[in-house]
Image (cartoon, rainbow, N blue to C red; front, side, top):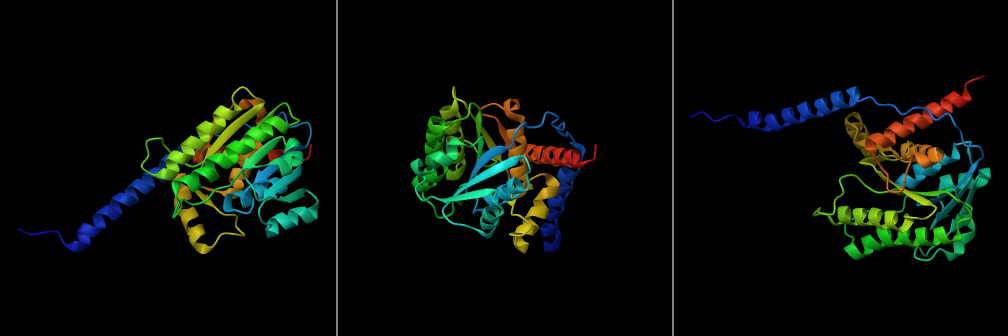
Amino acid sequence: MKFPRLRTILLVPVVLFALVYVAGVITLARHNDPVAVLEALPTQSATIAIFGASGTAGDGILKAAMADSDIGKIHVITRRPTPRIEAGVASGKVQMTLHMDYLNYSEVHEQIAQADAVYWAIGISSVGIDEETYGMIHVDFPRQFVEEWIDVSEKTDISFHYISSSDISEDSRAMWAREKVRAEKTLFATAEGTNLRVIAYRPDYIGPTNEEAHIGQDLLYWFFKPVGAAVRATQIGQAMIEVTARGPQFENGDYLGTWNITRYSHAYEERQESAELPE
């Protein structure tokens, strides 16, 4: 009996993977459902607050917000400054507040009371982290913030934009996936019946901004992007700004996966391009 050569055995899974990958690329290319450009533009400049701006996702969100002319003021609540935060402060658009206790926000009540929207990008990897610590950072930190923000907000309509994750489930064997679900449910329930809407963002791979990405991160981004499993951090920021501008179109408990993050990022870019065209 003649057995297949080792080379053939090794080649089969590679070919199967390539076929699945190409099928994913073709499916995504055919799945074109753009979001209509928002025509009713905001009547006044927005004030936002960003938490986690020193991290990968938060840096991209801050970059997008700094470039948006409809955002008048950005409060960055952070443990440490970064070159982008410092550049924003120097421009006059960003007010940075150093803050260490994320279970008590009394020292930043004045800043958050002014905010129309809060973009939350605080998070850590689950590698080497126990469940209690991971849950405190991803569930308790934002829950405590939302409770205090509702109490001190001066606005009648506010929104909280929380970066969650894809492939999360209460039944997952992965601790982080269960905790992200718990975070979403806790935040949605806290906002129920209040002037707050919580919207969750569930991206797959998040590519850092071009300035911050190293070659390995860029390779991962360009590998996952063709099959719709990657977004740039700036795209998340653009999607958050677009969702904020659309207000009541989104309800408390809504969430956007990678595909919808990309769609609303594109809608944001088209709106900006339309605004720049001469009349």
